[in-house]
Each structure stands twice: as structure tokens, then as C-alpha cells.
Image 1 (cartoon, rainbow, N blue to C red):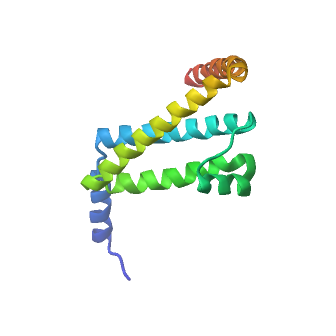
Image 2: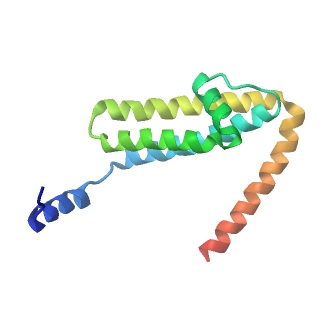
Image 3: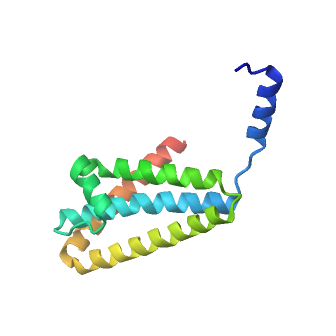
Length: 144
């Protein structure tokens, strides 16, 4: 297959002209943030005696150990990327909103579970607070 410069230029122009709807981009960012929050909270709950209900995530945790969040992030990122690329379809937009709502519910449920683990939760809040302050410091250092 021979690609001429003109064909390449047309493809490049179409690629540059493609714009993502801000609402779709926002949903994608929310899903990815909640996905990582879900992975962190899942690990915290499992470390304190809980168990994973999702059989696919349980299998990934058995296979990858404590690095299962990498697998989880890759799978969700690929799915979100495919939905963004098909954002012009109503079904893709519905899937993005549904995924964001489901991840929000899962994260809220995990916060409830962590609230019932009161002694653990109070010590973890202090650890998380220190982590957030340290991350804020490094963001400010990098920003300068």
C-alpha cells in the first residue's frame, strides 16, 4: 500500500480537527480518578481483613498480587479510551455516565466500609492526610 503525501496530509488534518466534547472528557477523567480511588480503597480494606467481591478483580489480585491496580488501571483506561473515540454515539455517552455513577457508588460504599472499621479509619486518615500534604508539597515544587 502506497501512501501519498496528499493522503497523509488529509488524514493528519482530520486527526487534528477531531475535538473531544468537554462533557465526555470530564466523564473520562472522573472515571479514571474514581478507578484509582477504588483500587486504593480496595487494597486498604483487604489489608484490614476484607475480601474482594468481584471475581475478575479477585483473580487479578491473585495473579498480580499487590500490583493489581496496574492491571485495573490499564483495563479501565483502554475501555474509557474506546468510549471516548466513539463519543459521537449516544450509547458510548450513556456508558461513560453509567460507569461514572457506578464508580461513585462503589467508592461511597467503600467509604462506608472504612467508616465501620473505626480504629483503622482514624489511623488511616492521619496517614492519608500526611500523604496528601506531601503530594501537595511536591506539586508546588514542580509547579515552580
